[in-house]
Amino acid sequence: MRNTAWQPEQPLPKYADRATAAAIITHHFFPISPRTLERWPLTVRRPNKATVYEVNELMQYAEAKLQTAYAYKQAES
Image 1 (cartoon, one colour):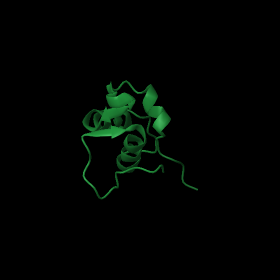
Image 2: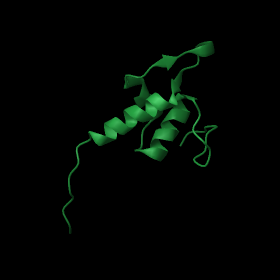
Image 3: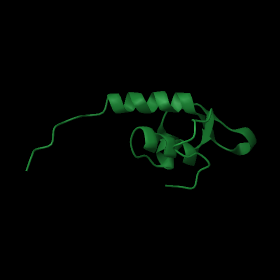
């Protein structure tokens, strides 16, 4: 995991940079890299040329992606 200011025991921030957003999604839903967020259709804000995402929108998209993911039962050995 990349070095982020957010830790799992802390409340979610309103906005997050790419590394922090990836850490939040990895903790709450599924493993993801910060580069993957570049391909998601999310609103990006660029204060001082830094890329930040709104965490509520990020969480909604990740949850929808998880709910629509292909699911199957693995064979027992």
